[in-house]
Image 1 (cartoon, rainbow, N blue to C red):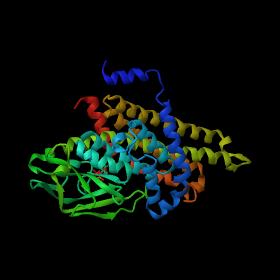
Image 2: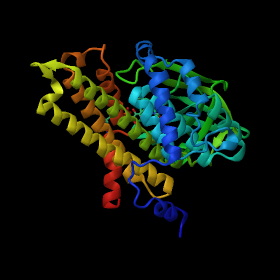
Image 3: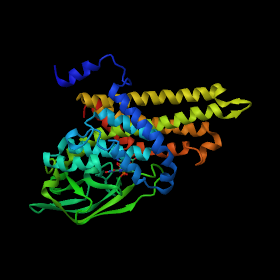
Length: 393
Ligand SMILES: Cc1cc2nc3c(=O)[nH]c(=O)nc-3n(C[C@H](O)[C@H](O)[C@H](O)COP(=O)(O)OP(=O)(O)OC[C@H]3O[C@@H](n4cnc5c(N)ncnc54)[C@H](O)[C@@H]3O)c2cc1C
């Protein structure tokens, strides 16, 4: 019996949402942190469009920045599913902190765990689990969905590479010290020239550019990166030169489940707010949740959230079991981002006029939900992945 089959058999008959003792304890600790430490800071971080550095430190101290990092490097040595639980719980309170932790775990740490050599893992995973925020830099002004059309170039100079170009839209750009950055080192070979590099913030020729002023997840920094004759030691090539396309595709396949988790967290936050508000708000002499139309709206929201959650949990459990999860991950992100947008929009309507103003939390959930259809592959790109796998192209 294969290892993955054993993992499946061990879980057979267990509902997807049933958590192990360890998962329950972990989720409870993240929930306590999110409600106790994060919630009181959300409004100010949103208004200042900046994450509180003290909160980021707390994320490290709690082990949230190295969930899957092996214990020998100071990480928690936990599963991918645990990272998904953390992103969901944090995003229920704030999607910006949700994506900070998501990018760190599902993209940056994951890429190093999978493709880093022993020296790179020792050096960078140790930092990433304890003090350094990471970022993942693929997109450029002219290449988003068509990511492999990137114009950033790396020239092999023997013991180092010289990189020139600009990246755009990079999450954690302002906080990060370690960047997984993709550049083409052999443009004649097309996408087979794309190479992944590990770049430190203070490498010569590397600067962080303009920060975007965004609709949602406003406290999360999204920045430009500028590389002007940036000198990167040869030992900082991640995986093999020319295999960056594979690293980027495979990392994003996993990352997508994390965005699904961010979306179900946002949707849960919106639904919980709507349930509480509709129990309190009185019209026509009774709480508005006594009207059947309102009850049905809440029931629709809860049903869509449940479906999204099952899809996200299933894709994550498949990943941990070593089963091919690419289609399910794309479906989970697609569905969860749509569900989050619908649920948070309905939450605004259930708050009436109060839903439309910043004194109440639901308009933020809606603004934060919008990013789910855009990053780590737009909804059209998810549909393309799903369709290709369906028709076998
Ligand atoms: C807040 C934020 C954070 C981000 N964080 C990161 C990050 O950390 N790292 C990173 O590398 N990138 C990041 N991105 C970039 C993000 O991944 C891209 O914005 C996304 O991939 C879309 O690319 P684009 O913006 O160039 O849109 P385009 O690719 O220009 O797409 C525009 C529209 O055209 C559609 N479209 C394009 N091609 C096709 C096609 N073949 N078929 C059908 N429809 C198509 C798209 O679906 C979309 O609706 C972030 C973006 C934002 C807004």
